[in-house]
Image (cartoon, rainbow, N blue to C red; front, side, top):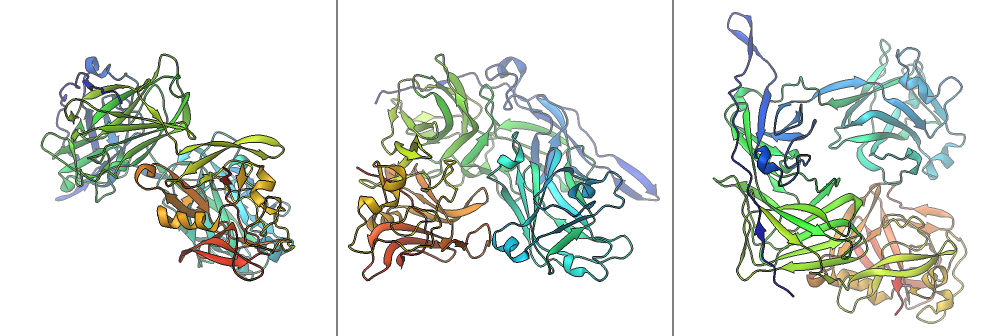
Length: 630
């Protein structure tokens, strides 16, 4: 491995200053006063001449409108772009959502459009399931999907009853409800990764004969979504459900709220707001960003006894240049060190630098994932990653396109000293090694050849496919098919025809038959290896699906496998699917090995309570996660 010496670019200039902004008070009567909402004036470290080291359009150089900072645990929004701006507290706005779609057809004249009637008069949505029990067993719930005018944080949903709901037809009231969020530029029907925000159970909605107001569902979304889905799981009873009106309460960035007063001084402010949860300040280990010419959020902090906030950069910055000869697309960049953490909870020293509470915990790394893979060029694309200011023996930089990984270890003749507010240039080109623990293997899916990603999680371990057999969208969280042991037809209620012997031959191996000769079902020992050789994290959610994440150790600690809890099949029915029941979820994965005795074979079973290797009846429909046949 070659040696590389960091070159520190020019540090940003000193802070500029602002005049004091005293709190405004209005006299009501006598000595009583009413405090006005606080407006903070905030200045960012750096002057225009040195800021060009980054670029004038970078977030680390200038705020953008509606950027968020956390002040004493309260969120404030930027009013303008630039190195100096004002921040105001959010206020709420109550609007009827823009109608998009309903999964349940309303009666004539009572369609979902009635819920977003501009005047709010004579509104009513009433839907009926032709066969209530079929409707419930197939998870075909009553769903309303609404679109916001712009991506917004949903605070609450206000509901009004129908005229007859408060009187003699109270069984039509909503009882159990889920709220989901999703943001995409594509038509909503293509969405497969709705994110669950909140579940409401056993609602006791009001029956007010005056204004029909039923109650408020406090959603309190922590991120902005463009689409929201209100999923009514149950009503009070019967096969008809209705609501006469609904309004959404959004968090508005226009200001007007009074989140703080001068009595709350001194003010401790963090950018981005996600650094501080109201109790602990943390440099996150996983960051998702939109890439635009290297743009990123530079962690900053300010402390003041007045409403003037003068922000200083908390970290140093790695400026990493990646060329297309090295990797064509960059999906993520991970930075770690053999002797120091690169993320974690921190305090702030006298110089304004983030000081980690556990600086020697090398398992704490920082991974930046880009929402869309970034295409590199022959000249090179520049990526910025902020890391704590401390002394490192080395820095390992792993760059991935989502399937293949390449990494380099940067070293110098002496320790690498990263200082606050300085930039360090690294040329990734040619200075890397390719990983041996992840790749692709061809499979025949849907009549065509598909390169299926695989991952290896321990030495001499199998290469597990990234998703289940039967999956058609290449999504690791998708369920795929439900196959009897030795079967190849999804949800086939017939028993497996093969019960003789210990290991399934190729002609009965589900993976081999459906994906081709490059793949097979895992052995019992290989499934057991997931429990013995990996860090196991239960109840992990990807989109709306829950499951278990298995992460390798040591040299394999950068790699993981997700097994969704898809439930299991019994005949043509699917049981214990998380999307049907969030409390009673499980997932079952066949091995190719038979348990002692007839009609039972070994499988990996995951549930809310445990993960074990156990025998199950061969006539059940389980998931199959293939491994590469070598």
